[in-house]
Amino acid sequence: SQGHRLAKALGHNIVAGVPSLFTFDIKDRRLDGLAGTSFPAVRLALSGRGKKKIEQTGPLLITHWGLSGPAILKLSAWGARFLHENNYRAEMTVSFLPDRNSEELYRELLAYKEQNGKKHVRLWSPAVSPKRYWSRIAEYCGVAENTVWADLTKTVMTSITSELTAAKFAIGGKGEFKEEFVTCGGVDLKEVDFRTMQSKLCPGLYFAGEVLDIDGITGGFNFQNAWTTSRIAGMSMVS
Image (cartoon, rainbow, N blue to C red; front, side, top):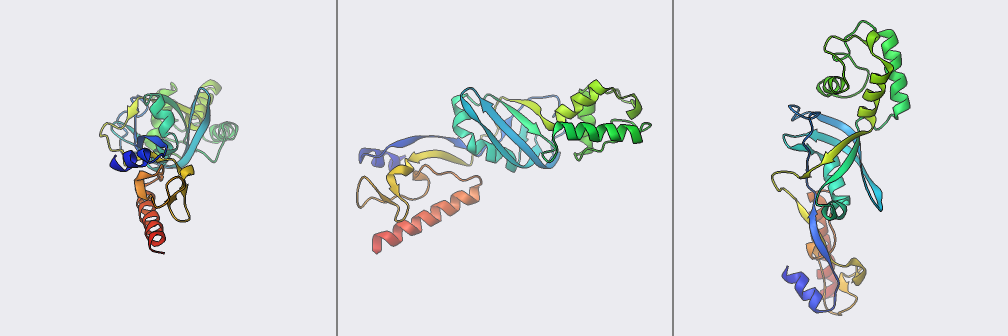
C-alpha cells in the first residue's frame, strides 16, 4: 500500500502481509451433508515441522466447503503465517469434547455400554455432540446401522474415542469464497512508540490502523485498533 511504501522509504521495516481471519476448505466424508451442524466448544490445533503447536478454542460450524466458526477464524489468525508458508495445506487436530481426554471418554462410553446394552449405537450416545455428527462418526468407525451397544467392540470404542477427542483433518486451502477479513503484516511494531503512535526512527511520523502489523481475532477488534491508534496519534500530534 501507499502507507507501507512511504514507511519503507523512511527507513521502516515492513512485515510482509498475508491473509488473516478466513475459513478452511476441507474435503472429508465425515463432513459431507452436515452443513449447518455446529458445536458450542471445540479445541483446535495446528502443528508443523519446526513450529510450536498453535491452539484455539471456541464454537465450530460445518459448512458446504469445510469448517468455519469463531474457533476456525481465531486459528487462522494465529496461524496465518504458518498456513501461508505451507500454501494453506496443513493437518488440524480437533477435539469435539475439549473438557474430556481420551481416557475419560472411553470410560464414559464403557459405562454407557454396560447400562444401555440394547440401545442402538448410532441413535444413542453419552457424548455431548450433535446427534447427526455422532451418528456419522459411529458409521465412519465401522458401526453397522442396527448395532446395539452390547455388541460394540473395544476396538471400535477406541476409534470413536479418538475421533471425538483428537480427529485429524487435512486443510486443503482457504474457504472457497475468498472471504478473508483482514491482512496481517505492516510496519514492524518494534519501530513504533505506542504511547504516541510516533515512529521511533522518523520523528514527526505517526502510524494508525492496518498500516501497522496488527490484526485482531475478529473484525471488531480490527475496527477498534483503527479507532484507538488513530485517536492516540491525533492527540499526540496536537499536544
